[in-house]
Image (cartoon, rainbow, N blue to C red; front, side, top):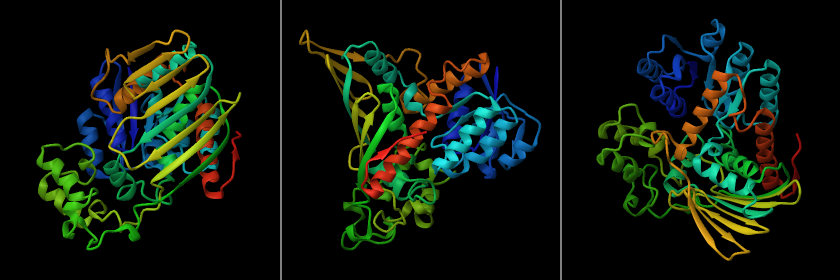
Length: 412
């Protein structure tokens, strides 16, 4: 039985705790550290956690209470609790990104390595059944040597508006830049699939649409007061109240208020950030970006993140010397150049924890990390401290390239 302490009882922390609750024969939440009383008490109550703290500092000051800690605070608040808890002997599962600067990421990884505890970053895409399928096909040489990759992250228009215009990740100074906050998953995924480190990167992108000069005539500061709200694809009224009226009380509407009722959500739209016009918010992160990468050995890849899509799964084409792989997050079309045949394969969902997010990635991560802690074997963890730091440094290099118009080298 692996005992967990949850540091940060927001959506991510609660989601990982829920996995433990569904696998009570393997894991147990015994401690919760969270400054918001309602979130803290609710999560502790749901799991019967006997140890409840108003801050991570209180948890770190107490005797070690659990085998492992899940650090799921906001992006800028990972480093100090992670280091303190590692030094107390907690094995660590830390939400991505590790930190908003390369220096802080390096400090965290160095501290964890020195402490000698098991460590994993929540790069959950590595743990999806779909990823396992793609990785196996590539590693088995089914398309020969990988020459290049084209990868798309279609964030989705309403998802982008929710999280990156109105939400917690809308500003670099409040959280981190877009590529790190959202697409660090994808850069890490490409590193995992190609199986080699990135050596050089370039990047282009900007905040093109969600700015005051793009506002339609007649737009108001809040959707509830807006004369053109009914014709706006980014209407907060349509998104959030529409969910409530349809009986959907989970994410994203649950982010607005603990009381997911029509009256409470309407109040949040009137008073909080999620009711603001997308053209009049204080956001500054990019809404589209392209990254070009060169891996060791000469393999190249392009990655595109865009807000301007439906909310779809990632899409990937991998070009090899023997064949071509085209994947959509569930199925893979594999074309063999020698035989001229195309095979369609579907990622197995057998035994998949369907209640977890990221199409099984969250469950796969928790399963792997829990196994590692229970056995003392880091093997199930798909990226250790050094490789996790490497993928973060690639993201930082790409953002430097975007801002400076240069080609940047990636180095540890």
